[in-house]
Length: 320
Ligand code: F6P
Image (cartoon, rainbow, N blue to C red; front, side, top):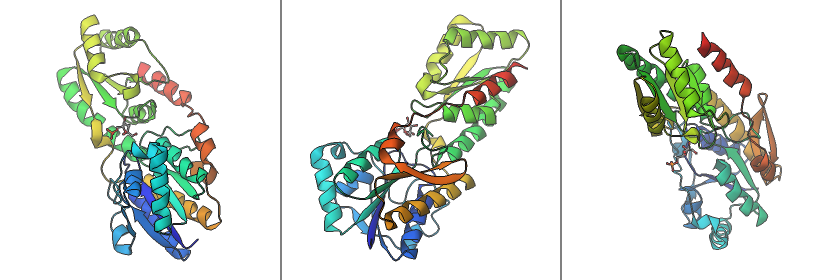
């Protein structure tokens, strides 16, 4: 394989730039030309393709976002869109493609594979919702971002003897809420994988107050409901004073953690090696600290396992 392409797709994640850099460097090391495709599948359809150079990836790995930009493309979900994308790849002589993104991006990648384009998926999403890999690029940074914010919110909640409920991203996955909750010593974690009735949750906060614990931090994953709605419920049913914060995009930006940088480098390298070995239709991931690969179909199908032990650990610690 002489020329490969790389694109980022879906929600950006800190660490995507490190993965792009690793793809570029590995490609160069293996004697390939590496082309950057800008604005994800949307840009691919529109022919936004250019050679990547050392300048494109130099001094970028510590930055969040993606130098290749990203997008969520509706057109690529159509047969016509996929056809256009393939004709652009052919026109540029791109023989293999690396796609950095979440499960939606992997589905797109599979369409290209079906059409005969060797393509490899690298898991990049802050949500950590891809079951075939222990970690996705960006998750660790998002957890660190959230943990840092929890302590700021706790300071002001404590000053007023209030409860703070903090809503975090993750779509249908509670991992950000769970890990940041443990890292930030949350008193209660509400996640879609462990549905808890709000009356039970409100009751716990009321009990905390009765036993003299006036400040509690509640983490709520967006898949489990809205922080504002939960706060309104607690106000209506208890005498607990509660304030809601939605962290939003600050959890998705900023410098990638060292863990995410290293993960991205390892996954990026393996993705290009697979293309060089003539293996398309694979997704790279990490299991027990070992980089491995599975078929894209399997990567999409494997159900994400929630870490109930970790959840119980928090429950136990919050009791005392
Ligand atoms: O998938 C990543 C993610 O940040 C989710 O956690 C969140 O629900 C969604 O993307 C937000 O999407 P957008 O960037 O389109 O607002």
